[in-house]
Image 1: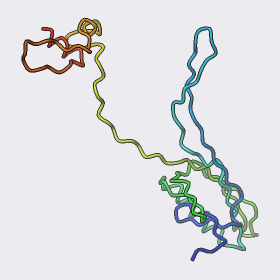
Image 2: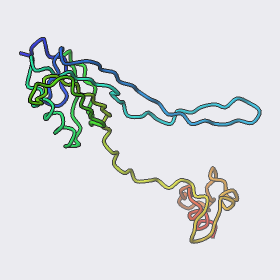
Image 3: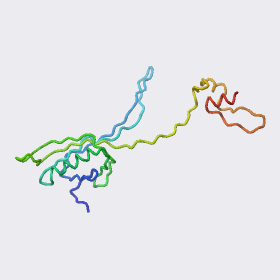
Image 4: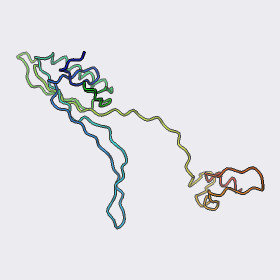
Length: 185
């Protein structure tokens, strides 16, 4: 059974409710400006940035756990450069995140220099796996480099009307400049 003191998990790192100082995330969308003549510009959505947890502040105190051990655990996670799941014990799953930045702030030490209290500030960025390359379909050709044919050749034979044959098998519509030139001889 999960203790009620546990607030969240980042990978296997347990964040207790008394450890959490601040948690904030932001979503950001990208827009391209389209300038229009004689009118106000418009904007078109071009995509969304990866979600960023811009501030995850973790307070470490010697009353609750070994500060150095928790610090080393987080530091090793940052050095591994892996994506870890971040979720709350309520069941809310934020997704997989990489540690973008790691900041340690000493709050208090004993007379031998051992950390008694520290604060770690993490910036996490959502891990978005790279998409597999998709085979590109040839769009209607504007220029065929071998034949030096342009879209003008396509205008001579409208794509809506296939070449006529005398009662023979119907031919398929030409979709590229190369096919149009081949059909028209």
